[in-house]
Length: 217
Ligand code: GAR
Image (cartoon, rainbow, N blue to C red; front, side, top):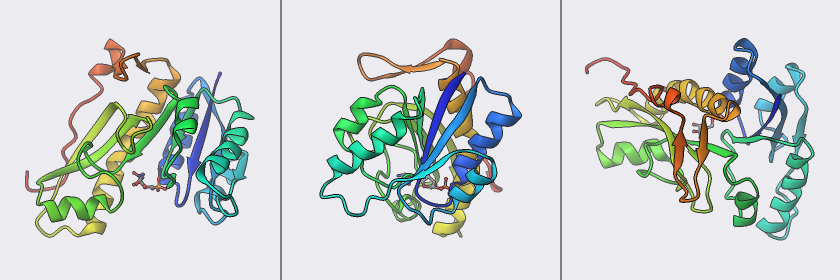
């Protein structure tokens, strides 16, 4: 049975869907721990209610990113993870951290990468006037929001959208694609090759359908 460790910073809705799907679909995996850099992350309570071990590794009080990431790695590694899932973990990670987990470290970003890296992605999309937007699940590499793309979901941008309505539409799709990709990782159906490309097993390539939701299209 594979060990999944999930890192959060806040609400944890992506973490919740992964926990729920893991249980409902009887994955050959367990959520070994949910770890937050913030003690007030709302998602921690959900994890505790599910009987999942939780840990808080606060980023406060560390002199630099390297020393924080070393402490975080020690906690993560105590759970012997096969897959490490960043689910709204709002920290820039050091190269040492990323290299340690390379090929088993996943992230979801709320945009169609390589567009709109960083923060406020929904406002960035509205400001850019794009008609489609979405979410991306990718392997994490030292380049911020730059790792190889595994799956994307697409939604329309509607004329009356604001940051919140667009975020809600994207989040719904995040909850569809992220559990699916985590399961692929658990089942060994997705990997990162030596050239830093995501490689999908033939049986899951068909799982990358476009998702268009909302009225008017
Ligand atoms: C999600 O929208 C996720 O894509 C985003 O934070 C939100 C977390 O929500 N992640 C990033 O912006 C990473 N750069 P959640 O805590 O409810 O899963």
